[in-house]
Length: 528
Image (cartoon, rainbow, N blue to C red; front, side, top):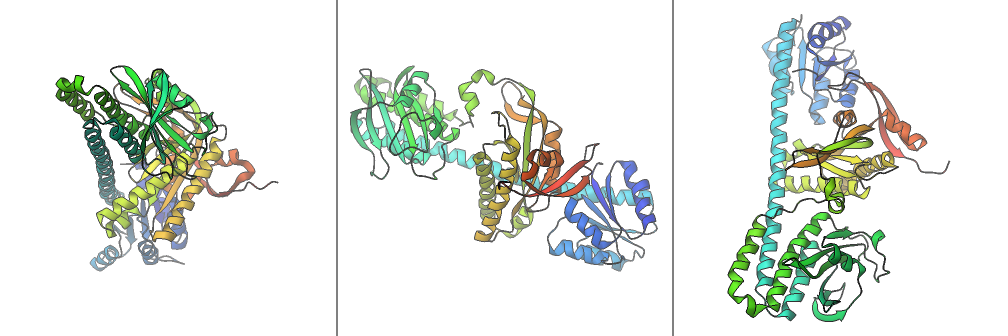
């Protein structure tokens, strides 16, 4: 065990130098020192060390006062007391106040090192257990969501494939497409005699879907039918002046036996309605498979009577293997790009973590914990996507986002800074509305990294690797709740826009070079 950061708070310079030079540094620990309790508390709040070695008797603020402050403000940094007395009463008192252990003066390196290592091991095991629990909760929630989606699809598939009346079937498919994607409008288009016919539609504020038989011109649907690929379309890609103008749309082709028979589309027209995602497109595509089969069954009911059981079994087998993947636009447009490897390029990395979650989860019931965790992670994901960042991964109750990859963004540093500020603002709004004592701590850094697909040919992830990623993560770990820490290179790129306070050099765990950190509080876009 090494590379952890340990803060030594002692009013005697000889004691501080002894602990640093003869106990901690030889074992590879990073050290911070403070000459009294008041200075030590400020450093603990700023740098969030892995462990504090705290003297009992000091000027300005003694060890008891420091520990009481940490306890009352729910700041979870393990503390080992250093005392010249070492009685059992002292041990009981410091444990009652929240200290992990105590060390007698004068110090003996072997004894002190053993207590430090045992304490860090115990704390790390506890944190690993908590992180594993969070990951398990998240994985269970995601699994439940996928199972629920598949159950809905299976239920809808059973209902539509059981219909043989076209006037009942087509509106049912349209209603189902609006239901699973939460869309304002939905359309079912069929190719008939080389014409594209709208056979059923659900329009905004016009009630439930009804059967139709109207020839239409829809260049997006025509493109989907030609390419045989599902797609999500944002407003910038609309070439037609539609009324009302959609805020987002998603289409999927209806294919049966390698023949395209039409298309299924959904639109959002209400301002502020979420933009469709690739996951929505995957759900629509799954429904499209059911719909195409159902339509073909209705058209050829008598001819398919003898093979109905076999067809239903084939559908069941298909959807038992179906797992809706998070398909990105790059994968849809360029499947050949899905190869292991990457390229070196400049990116801006943002790490965000929910602070106060562990304490809060102990006080709330599991349902509230899951709801709250999903709420805060959803807020973070929406903010990242709103600034067109790439949501790389969730890390327990935190996340990693990348800007300037895979799509180039000339203003990627500004986007990351804006997103970080928006995250803190969103957390503050949630606190005022719901009373949660939760917020984010955020780290941001810009630099070169290797970006691409990592893993195996059968299982790969699009991610970034490099020092810029590691340092952004460490800055986030050092950041206090509600605080954004950025590296000096970010401030230089932001220039006069940055409203920031220098924090000086910090020694980063696992990194030989120090980093110059700033606390970002805002961006000023006023004309100079």
